[in-house]
Image 1: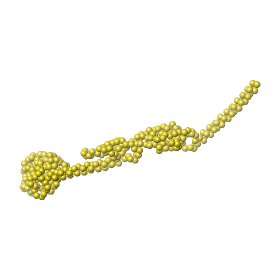
Image 2 (image 1 turned 90 degrees about the vertical axis):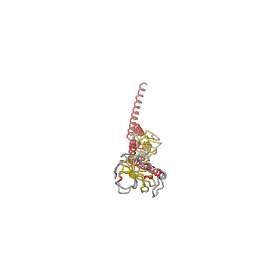
Image 3 (image 1 turned 135 degrees about the vertical axis):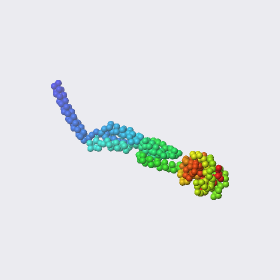
Image 4 (image 1 turned 60 degrees about the vertical axis):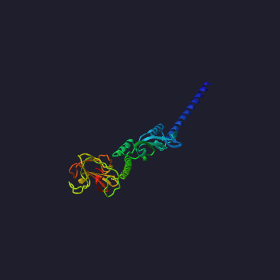
Length: 345
């Protein structure tokens, strides 16, 4: 009985080994066929849509993380609304597996926000450039030779944009700010000119209505200020001395360098050397009234400048056709000389 049992065990053990061997060989064949025809990959999807296949999930996840966290090239931050999902699959070996396709799809689904710098005027954006250094350089250039009374209220602020096309290069931005500067300076000058015009009109009201006949003692009750203290050495209308024609002004003799003040406030219309007058200032007081200051040793104001009645505008001298230091003073109405002593001295 034991002999039969032993033989039975041997038989079935042998058969089992044969079966196991066949299964192992068959499995190896199946695995070999599968490995030849298929390969393991990850299918990548976003919101259920397949965007590609990859072999290394860890590698692609690191690339995506690096891409999202990048701050190169003015990038402030990146956002992707939905992260990709991965599914392990066996696919035919001829299936296209490409990390670049997946990354391209990720980039197309990512919103990128950039940080730039805007040059502003009183908080209003005038131009946007890539860097703070560019913005500072533009402001410094615009402020060069700018009248200190013209405040452009320039500043720099960070701005965040999704579109790079709104950013200007430095040259373009500088030209934009230069045009803005010209406009503001013109606006300022027009405003000052209008103010000066109004002041001149107001001053003109204090003068008499100008006539061709000589005035009688004053200009509408307004006494003019004495430009210098001294001695009258040659009167209006006289002849002789170094001149060949009738004297059109009044000569006041005093020491060289004595400060000269205008007879009244006004606008300088001429400041320079003029023939026999020597160094000459002409001031317009409005309504056709002008005063002349000749033979000066120095001129302290320029054409276009507004001067007050107490301003020192020049210094007594002996330039031009002169025999000694003195002030030649003329008052003209509509271009016609009148006797200054009807008003002063």
